[in-house]
Amino acid sequence: MHVLVIGAGPTGLALAVMLARDGNRVTVLERDSGPPPGGAEAAWESWRRPGVSQFRHPHLLLPAVFRILRTEVPEVLDELTAMGLRQGNLLDGALRSGILDGPRPGDERFTMMDVRRPLFEAALDTVAGRTAGVTVRRRTAVRALLAGRERVPRQPHVVGAVTADGEAVFADLVVDAAGRNSPVGRMLRELGAPGPVEERDEYGFLAYTRYFRAAPGTEPHVPPWPTAHYETVSTVSCAGDAGVRSVSFFVSGQDRALRALHRERTWDAVLRLFPAESHWAEGGRPVTGVVAMSGMEGRHRRFVVNGKPVATGIVSVGDAWATTNPLFGVGISAGLLHAALLRSRLRTQDADDPHQLAVRFSEATEEVLGRARRHLGVWDRHRLAEVERLTRRPPAASAPVDSGWHFRRTLETVKLRDPDILRAVAATAALLTTPADAFGDPGLVERVLALGRPAERPWAPGPSRSKLLAAVGAG
Image (cartoon, rainbow, N blue to C red):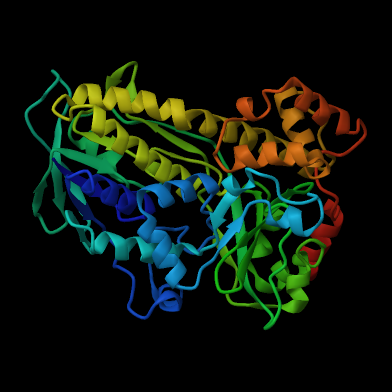
């Protein structure tokens, strides 16, 4: 089978390698250029990816995706190791800070890789380039989709794509891996398809990030947990490679007072308010300015509606299917899980029946990834509503208590007080299991509720809103 993949991001390249190793021929079309020569630092310093707005934002290779790489494309891990990258563990910060009394058997499932995205893509590009059956064509944008003979009455059947230069590239299956800003929906409508049906949140978050390198001879500080949620700000600290670590502030897109965080002086002034990360202001060397990212509203594109595909001959994977809040770092991991799911589906489902392929793949996607997407979407809506209430002057009255949201917020305050609770949280954050399975033991749920203090604020101890705004003004 010949598969045409639109997009050479992590999902597209990993999928191409997996499918080629099953004996398929795979062509990948990518609008941007490839990694420059010169190794890891050249990829970070010089590689430009205009088509990927989040290219230089922090990314996590969560334990679930590390497991996929180890079993499916271990050469990628070999490439990253050759670049000098090292493995880490999601529990490292908790172990170093003494929250955990030591590792337990089974903690190896939390192994992950600390890497900046450009280096990860460069490693994938190297492996794809030497994989028989894979052809990656860069600087080749897709202008339109090609329609062939309908397999289902009144449903377009996609048989390939037309490049910006007018070249027709035919395939037995087209895979949309073009990311959050994929143009494939528009192209399908141009063929007469009724979709995909897109569900998009009204607004989302903004992120402001700086990268630092630890002082020579010192180890980068590792917080007990990568994320922390304060009154109206969340912070994310991600390990990179070569002693680099990123610190990000996530704020509501409606919180105009904090948009000044795109200025370095303001960002640095705010950083000093957060004890868990303020040491970077004194002991770290910044290696970037402030990298801002917007357009992070949750988005979901449904290619099968009421059991009927909007078109056959095409499926969507990764961010082209759905996006989640980057605060949780699941984007690349979910994309590679999705790629592995499609590869498994193609092993068991005959691509000569494109209708069944589209329906069954959609069902499998919802079963494996849909719950996590919805879980994070609910978190986003509650958190954004909470911030909106707190930023009003005077603050609005508290919203009615949602028991599920109350439990999640309680988890945020107690997870660092109990090793079993922390490991359950880690298993869900790592995409190793579902929240329902991780907290299926009623005794564990009771411990969460017992550790939660009735009068305790549901966010981490940190600067008040007034101090935050004063730092913004001073910066």
